[in-house]
Image (cartoon, rainbow over all chains, first blue to last red):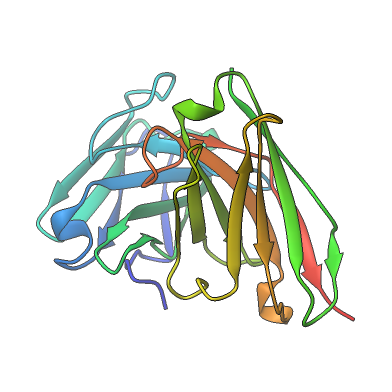
Length: 109
Length: 117
């Protein structure tokens, strides 16, 4: 049981816009930044979004993050086949630990 | 270009200590916080803990009693020891780093460690 709640799966067709939600509480998302990671099949995770809505250099602007209260979202616009991956949200929890969501498997139909 | 590489045994016996090392290149080790994260097969990510070059550490409360992370700045390496392992500790272990201990800009490729007799 993960501290942060994500839908186990999401899907979309090429060109569509898809959003992935991440729900937490006042002790984690409600009081800390949210981060998003993309894990392509068989590879290590990659930082996609930091501090709620910032993109590291090299991450396409098709990826965007937002946070409101105790929830956060990752949006992917102009969906492409290479976006098929697992996506994880993460944040700091006031219990003194980095916590992750359970992950969302994105399928591009 | 920051690069991380994990190394260590791929098989550990139950009740023994898992030991992994992460070698870092591409900048001064003092610039970043260094972490270990693991992922059981087919499951999600779990943060294990971090170390700063000065030796300051913090660990996941659920693993704290069994974890030790250390750093060797002269070798640009940091290490993980997890004691009294069980099958539940079987996972891909990643080393990671970043400007803040709360997120991971850089990742190693991962090292699968299986706990089995």
